[in-house]
Image (cartoon, rainbow, N blue to C red; front, side):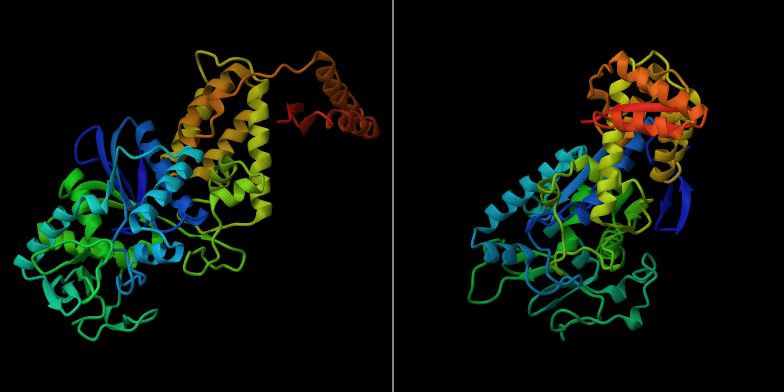
Length: 457
């Protein structure tokens, strides 16, 4: 039984899809004006785990992810300069070239982290027609108004606007990072269509019933998710930063247009934070990229494993030391697999049940990892452990099934047995001397089950 925490209800619920055996999943993708930072990538890893767990529960998943290549403005309230224009000016390149470069970089990050691509990538600039049609529908139903700079959604007309994020509308303010828009009727109102500045031509602009311009950020996700998944679909996922603005606005404009719930489950991942408790953000210029970690010698999959050390709904503190520990754990894990016999026909049912119960309980990856290490340290045949670990890897995605066995010479195995014999008679001096000899070639683990020697990579 799969349970997920639903932001909509603020509780963990048993999941069942709208249509038997198939799940519609929408995940908010990147704004391709810069590299994704590792905080962003934590969200995409959690969403990948979500999809893998759905598949492990025998669901077929139709996964849609957007590429925001226009309309995402500097302010979270959808005001200010378009981030794509900002990126193009920063790098003195064409906006379309910027979009392609950072889209390709993002897709490479996903590949390096073993994140499965979506069923379909959808770009905002390929769906201008659908966005205009949705705005027209909102206009026809009386939810919009026009200002000198664009078409806005009137949040006062959508009475449930504050419900999703538990907002206190009267306390909301705008203009924190930019000058407030005096023409907006309500502080929470957001743009659906922005007019191009008079006297200048933008790199990305289109004709519309209201004038030449470009869509606001929020409208793309509503238009594209509903096009490919229907007016109501199963799961919408993203980061917690999307709850108070982006996802709240998606719900308002979608449900105002259709009169139906947009998504049945809303699943959100928490921030990756630095030791100062500050979240990683491009606007703060304090972000690390996956490429920067690789240049320091870290395997991307060590970062993937590191993210499993905290539940996706808990903040995760990043440090070089923590990542080094994850790299050691990954090397250790690979070393174990390289010692094992080929997979057997059957795994270890007890551990498989515990593992998949953990991941099906709101994606509890810390608990799942604990089960994995318990199994590795158990006295079960290595061939059976190998089979079960390969099944675990359908969710972990650490590339364990492709590892080749490495034969350990009998003379080294004999040294490990001598360590156990010395420790049995409390001759720790001899045991330590023998261990030092082995550690030149192996990682040595001394456990209650005996001494394990693991080939170094």
